[in-house]
Length: 57
Image (cartoon, rainbow, N blue to C red):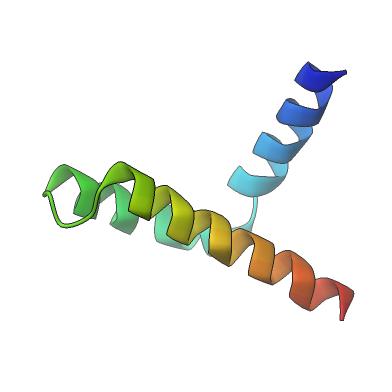
């Protein structure tokens, strides 16, 4: 059950067009020491969940 949930969430996240557009830039910022991996992940997740909320409004 948990594996199925995780797989669906991961698939939805990585196939989100906005996330796809932001991902490489956030990765570059982490590798250059401009952001921590935790901050980059939080920002990407915040964006993802904002998009989901906007679709339900």
